[in-house]
Length: 114
Length: 115
Image (cartoon, rainbow over all chains, first blue to last red):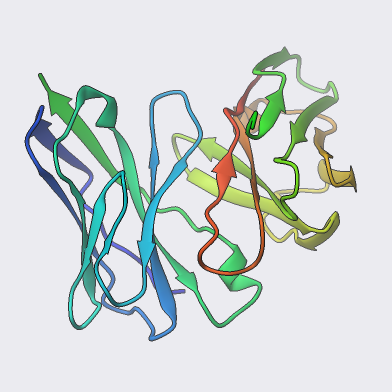
């Protein structure tokens, strides 16, 4: 399985943008890039996903490098409620079984300072 | 939409006892997943179902663990007998469809402590 590498932790100031990086140098052409986050004492929640093009939704933006070997989750204005562990996950678009499985790594713990 | 509902939220049991964790997926979701989270191992997929049928149980740690989905609105994860190393937070998640454009919805988890 293609793996992802994320920094263990990052710190941000409230109301400033946050760029959370993810490296996935062994990504295959059919792997989708998914981001989930886990707030304290809660289950993970879906944030955003993409394949090749940059994506925007109400929660965040996803910037994907041209060679797809890295991506960046962008929170445009961090709030205290955004303090969470953010997971970057690859899902296989080919395999019906592998594509069904979310495999979580260690993620990045984002701390937001007031 | 009430989301994925798990019960109980907390469970404390003695070693050797049987433990049953329950999950009600979102109505209409045809995939159901059981995950376990510990500090040492992070989030691990235990088993998942599609249309109530177990598809991949390769993550189930031992024969002491079993999972069932008798109908589309209910699933159980049973541990018998329980051991202290089973202490973890167990999450249930559901999803509709097999495509990449469908996100997973997780429940709030059951925190299991085996003493």
